[in-house]
Length: 184
Image (cartoon, rainbow, N blue to C red; front, side):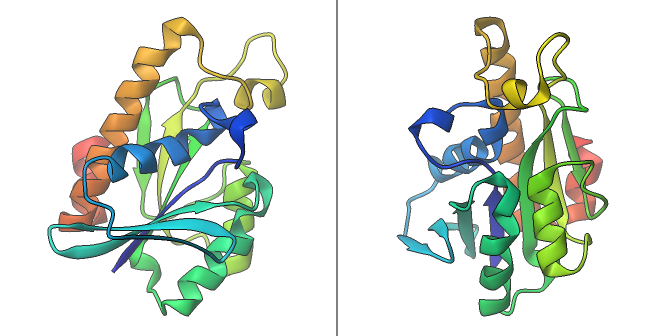
């Protein structure tokens, strides 16, 4: 079994914001496979799909971004999951819009959702997909991440979301090293 966590904030007011690209990637991936089960547990919406016979849980924490670890840690422990089978997808202002970076581990880069998960798991050694949302030139960071993509950005953002879903499919079947080689 694999668990893919898409970071974001719950609620209509946050739908399609830059900070919710993790949610958007899960929605794209879920649209490609029949949903076997969906439930609300561990302060999250959890959908179950199968990719090439592998059970995959798609997890959207409902704790709001800064408390994501409150949802992820009990879920990982409940399933007795090895951290090699966990992937977290989230936005990154330090990457240009549409850029993907996939890593087997590493720091939070100042992302509060990742800080929360790392603190609760007591490690930073779990895989992640970072999706570039760019950095604002004249806006505050909070306004930027909670804002929606501009008309000229939407196509590039949608391509990145599809590309990230492709990478996750490959991760399920081949592992992190092959995905990093193919997508970084």
